[in-house]
Amino acid sequence: MEYVEWAPQYERIRAEFGFPFDREIAAADRLESLLPESARIDPLPRIEQRLRGRDVIVLGLAPDSGPPPLWRLSPSTPAPALVAADGATATCLEAGLVPAVVVTDLDGPVPALLTANRRGSLVVVHAHGDNLSELAEWVPQFPGELVGSWAGPPRPALIDVGGFTDGDRAAYLAEHVGARRILLWGFDFDRVEETEPTLAARKLAKLRWARTLLGNLAAESRVPLLVFARDGTLTPYPGVTSGPSTR
Image (cartoon, rainbow, N blue to C red; front, side, top):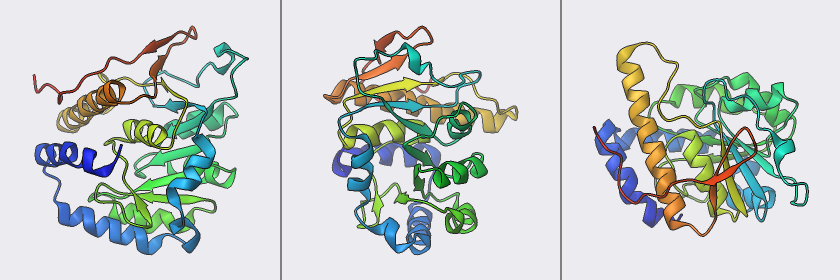
């Protein structure tokens, strides 16, 4: 998705959650200053080299999801590329899998992200108004290939191709760079592990947006967006074109 198409959606999200855009800009500036020179060059083409023309499995961190059953996919198709959303990176590593790409805003188990990066994963680090301190602490510690992203207009060193949470942002990225198909694994929009009521409600509100944004992508993209089930079944993700219900 191009930024001009995505920006109105994010304006609705910002309005609902009260994200100050000046802090988004501050985070983007911070991330850009922290990225090594190599990370600022050709960010999208470097991701495209890893994902274009391939089946891309986007891994979420739904409770009890575990690693995807790759053996259930047809052996006649090329090996899929794995894109892990933040905490799902640890699930991959525990199963001996190294994601091609990791998408993160650094609120998960960062040591697993560093390990995956050292083993060859390209890590897309997302800047937003609430993670300035995490950016300063962790970005200099990544040993491998990085790309930066944020929620505003694309910059030469920072990308924005749509998406809000790590999981749906990973799917939007795969679509943008030309994945053959996008297979969703480990997505659950109705359960969170947070027990504090206010925080749990906020996380569920974000998941409602994630569900809707993936539905928008399914409805508008030519790239098939499919749900990958434990038995190997691939079913189309239901397409929608409206925002999430507030009910």
